[in-house]
Length: 412
Image: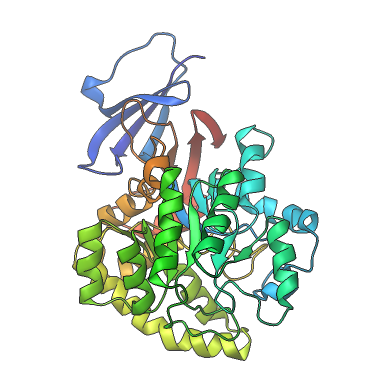
């Protein structure tokens, strides 16, 4: 394979100082060079260079769900009554839309990601590289329990390898983690607090004991996997941090003490501003969910700004999960960049959250990705414009004019 060369007015490496008049050289699936034009190698066998206004790493969406439900449906009781093949067929087009939006890697935190990841890796299905969690671990009656269905049905869903796995007590928690590891989960997802879209539980309440959470983290760690903790309320956040989780998802009720603990432990915050904003804008939620969403929306936004100001490391994640053109639908990933900018992050910090910080949310499973740097995966996007001046460009897939994934051009 001949080398490929991208010549750009602006090169944004993902982390560090942008380069004016930059060059990226792709050699097979990896980057051979990224830096100033003056230092770039010259290869007479290379194809004609691609000209770009801005070149940057492919983006990571660190909180997604491939659910394949009917567009606009957020009721898990309806979701699990459809055959997985039906849902997969409905959900697969979203992966193509993610690529077109400049997202080349995702963490999939509960859905069909484990089943679809090898299909994408084999080249049979266009989509971002998928690093999946398998089933979400939940306490009985917690956020991952479908309260309106008999508990035996939820156990059946777990046996099918989809969505949720109920676990109570340390022994069950250990077994539930091992079940996900057996399926080659790259990250473990646990509901450490209540949530918005579940019927009965309260987002503030802690839902696993400290000992249960430590067991989950310990068993995951034996296989070099990190734990992503769904947390809204402070009690669950603190218990999860004390247990050693890698990432806090949402973080709605974090405060200064939480920020200090996150800096001390090195935990990463994945805010998911997009789904809250889109559900607020659209409405149409059942009353129980609308009431809870209204209760957390403003405090969530305020506290994500607090975390950024306190120096907590942030990685971009949207909680995108819908098919078609419904709220929180695949392809809208870049809206998170604009929302992070709105809460006070400057454009360069936003791009670091969307690129370089993404692989860190996988801990020891992290690939060499998210940076324009020699030896890293050639996951690259071209932006028609300067996102340092207008970060909203990243929210418009039409302004993402070319995408490379592992050195193969998949858009443009």
